[in-house]
Length: 138
Image (cartoon, rainbow, N blue to C red; front, side):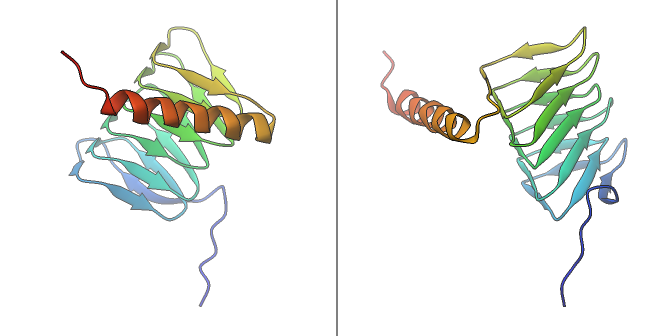
């Protein structure tokens, strides 16, 4: 039996005041208004609400940060939208980035519409991260 997922209906919601510790995998479209201490991986779109606090990386088709706080990297091939008062401390990888005023972004950003250039830039960035994580610091 196949499960139908559209890009409009929200399949999963984590409400304000709720919290999750650990990695989360979501099938479809999700809205996060609570706290997650772990990575998020979704097959669809993800909305990070204005009261959300995420300590971990997010990977989804597209991501909209309405005003929450994300301490981690965001990977969303379709697009990333950072709305006013959003805070992201981490790297962004997307083909399209939209950012409003009063957004705090501290990290590297790859935003290329050409698929081949995007894939090449992502590969280079991941290689650099792997190399720097293995380096010995004195």
